[in-house]
Image 1 (spheres, rainbow, N blue to C red):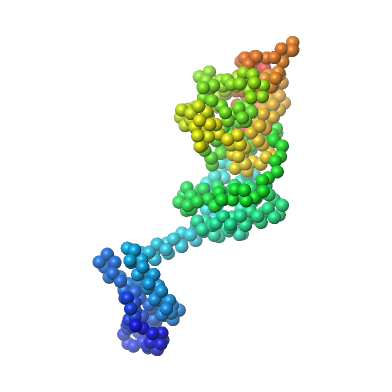
Image 2 (tube, helix red, strand yellow; image 1 turned 135 degrees about the vertical axis):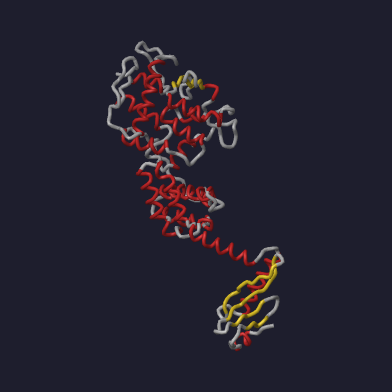
Length: 409
């Protein structure tokens, strides 16, 4: 058995020397004076060598510890040399797969589907509030407390809403890393309730065509969530029904051949008809293979016999970084009410009827659900076409002149 004194005092000779310890370990002394720890072992009927380090940087005691670790691997049926290569590759991968690198890859993948302002906001928050603190950390090693420290630092500046947004951004980055095999879990999932809830604000609506155009491009580029939620999010501005009515829509009430959706309005408890524009029919036809066997058009992720959460559309808007002061599921009703009247020139009573408000004719009688149905069908198609024109980037208005017989002014 070797001693540290023997290792230190043995001088090089004209040929390579070996000072043997135990269990296959020895100190190899080169003619030029260099000293290396080696372990000789057999694996799969082959003799192999494993380097344990350079003496005296690696002491005799440290070399024996490394030897024992290698022999434990052998006992478990693992080749120590191969194991070392795997660890080296893993460290190299971790150095490449930092949070910042993965986040920038995620941004490059999806920013083409976002509005420029949304992209700028996401990049700015990551660069200011995330990268300086955990950007260089291997994404697979980041823990919930590390993320929470980042969020609390933002909250401490009085930016609670920003902290919630950053948590959403990070969750998307972690899910992207999981999907691409660079992480195993999303640590932000453990932080629910760790931040105070943001104060509720009024249900906002976008009523300026240019801002609506940008909002629509963000919505129609939505790809992060379930297809069911994506479809509901796209239908919300097209149909402008109450959010509770949209989420509870039933396939039995929808006739795609007639392009009509008939149900009882939640507020007035009166029968109501929503004419479906070609764009709405196309979205529903795409969705039908996914949920057509469920009673609900937008079933819950947990049960096909329940509709999705009443917060699903607003939650999707938040994931798109559209905050509560900008837009909400209910706000699309005000958007349609304003622009159908002020931009497209449709009669107010026709719009109110389509909103399922209690509307009366000039003689004081309540309109029935089929009142002005042909005109409302034309209005809904005009509205869908108008949204498409806005999303394409043309918000010089008016878009089209009022058509005779459509209820336009």
